[in-house]
Image (cartoon, rainbow, N blue to C red; front, side, top):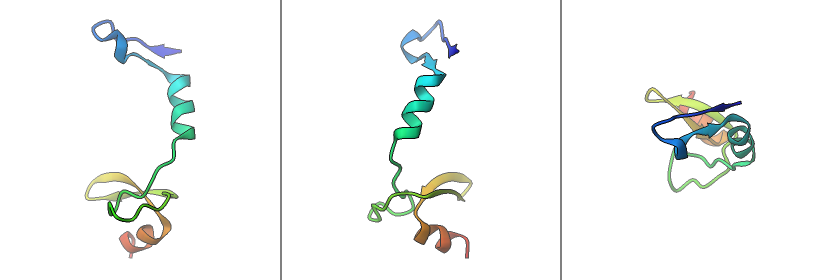
Length: 62
């Protein structure tokens, strides 16, 4: 199964390939640029979903 965009064929996405790439991608904490720790969960911050580590997840949800 794939999404095909006839106007932009290079931007067409194969859903299985996208799922594999996302599952193997390492996400790092986006709360602070200096953090650099591996993200363990997603949290909502200022109306956006961001990847955060455990420490910053607790800080955001206090």
